[in-house]
Length: 131
Figure 1 (tube, helix red, strand yellow):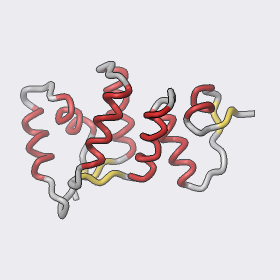
Figure 2 (cartoon, one colour):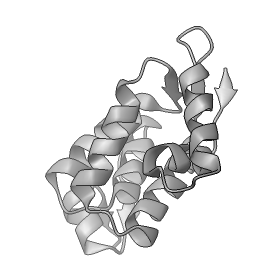
Figure 3 (cartoon, one colour):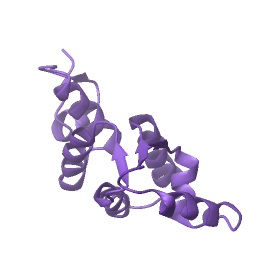
C-alpha cells in the first residue's frame, strides 16, 4: 500500500501543473488493487479546502470528484464508510463536507451527540447546537 498526500491527488484531479500532473498521473495509474493507494481523512480535508477555497469549485463538482475517487478499486480511504455517509449528507444538504465528516466520524466512534455552534452544521450535518 502507498500513502498519497493532497498535493499528489490535487495535481491528478486538477491537471494544472505541467511538471507534476504527469507524475501524479503515473503514480495513480501504477496503483493496483493488490498494491493500492491509501488516502487519510486529513488528506481529504486538505483536498476539500483547496477545491473549495482555492479553486472555488461548486459543491457538486467536489462531490463528483470525491465520488469518482471512492469508486476506484486502486484506492483505500481511511474510514471509507464514514466518508460515504458524509458525502451523501453533503450532496443533499447545505452543510460543509468537513462538518459532515466530523459528524459522521463522531457517530462511527459511538458519540451520541456532536455539539456545534454552527447553525447549518446543526441543521444539516447531523450535529446539535451546544447548550
